[in-house]
Image 1 (tube, rainbow over the protein chains, first blue to last red):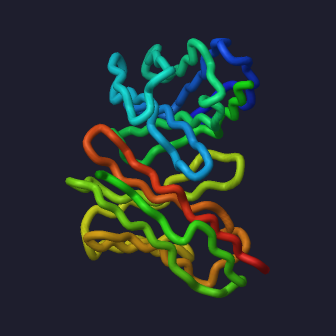
Image 2: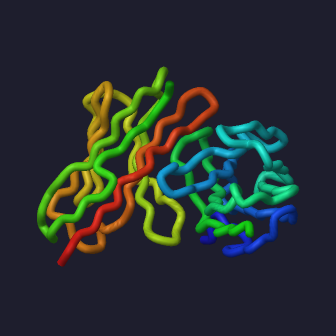
Length: 112
Length: 108
């Protein structure tokens, strides 16, 4: 009964370092999403994958890349972290495109 | 410009004091208006989807309604466990816009 699992839960990076945020869902959902949440800005869509084998940019894709590894897994990569990428990152999945998301518990990332 | 705006930003209620949260939207070709609840340190949890003006949905002490320009989340006789941030969201094209949320605190 795990739902959407994100790792790690917390991470501190130095400017210029790279890292990958992992996300896996066990609900056999077709669509997966990456959001960031910042105070006063709300949740903003970074990238999404409507179905296995496809990925598309969301509202704020710059500085990020994604990989839909298989139907279960969708990773988010920061190639060269910047302080502006300090945020809480949420992965979500849905059976129907952009309907009734199930969210993970988030990754709190700090870039110093 | 597509936009989802929530008010108030924060709301403090006494236990049992009913109130409403507002979500106004300017989204072309609305394909549903969604409500989520978010507890501190957790991801949002899906509550409702509304598709057409006049539609209403209920869950325990929560009732969501939709007009052509706004959605309301009515909270009847709230309890402390209803304290959370409530988010509304709307899809348009390939984007899914979230409001910034209303932080609700219910005081015993």
